[in-house]
Amino acid sequence: MRVTVVDYKAGNLTSVLKALRHLGAEPSVTDSDLSLIHTAERIVLPGVGHFAATQRLDATGLTPAIRAAIARGVPFLGICVGMQWLYTGSSEAPAQPGLGHFAEQCTRFAESSEKIPHVGWNSLEVRPVSRLLAGVGPGEFVYFTHSYKAPVTADTAAITTYIEPFAAAVERGNVMGVQFHPEKSGATGLKILRNFLGWQAEGTK
Image 1 (cartoon, rainbow, N blue to C red):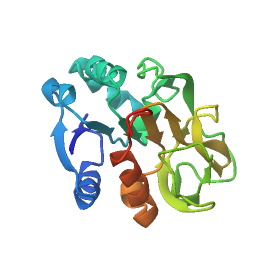
Image 2 (tube, rainbow, N blue to C red; image 1 turned 90 degrees about the vertical axis):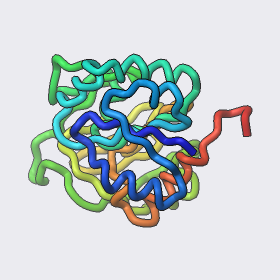
Image 3 (cartoon, one colour; image 1 turned 180 degrees about the horizontal axis):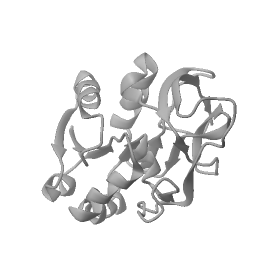
Image 4 (tube, rainbow, N blue to C red; image 1 turned 135 degrees about the vertical axis):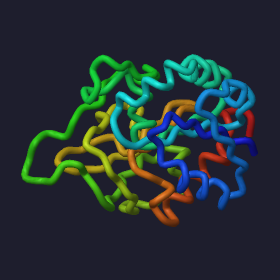
């Protein structure tokens, strides 16, 4: 299976590639080669760091290529900042637009007695309609590291609470995102990546 992993110079590529290869995928990495997006069977966008780094996706033409691939039905998975990019934007970099697949904005955690960023293991409350998280049981733990989060909406596939409830995973059609790092989340993370690699559009099973 050809999985295109998008490198915008702020992603945790090494561990993502290792996890995908462990599951039998054949990942290719692109930071500007649009042909790899055009021929992709799956697209993964890992991300860490500042939301402003996603500007590179616009500068290289990857944003419209990814948008066209999504429209063709190619399964897409955004990880951490890669998930936040699926929204209209983030208060971390107000001048930098996201993909806009989801209408909401990502915002920083509210100040509280808890430390920001949210770093470490936390549990998932999975909504039963999620296909990406199929087989993930109540309270399974995954690994987070982030200061910004997406709101809970109808598209939320899993919820985690830290300071406040937020979207730990999002899913609509062939577009999926996880705020946590599945490649660092042990057996649960591998299960989620396996679900993504096996994902088929409704009606094509």
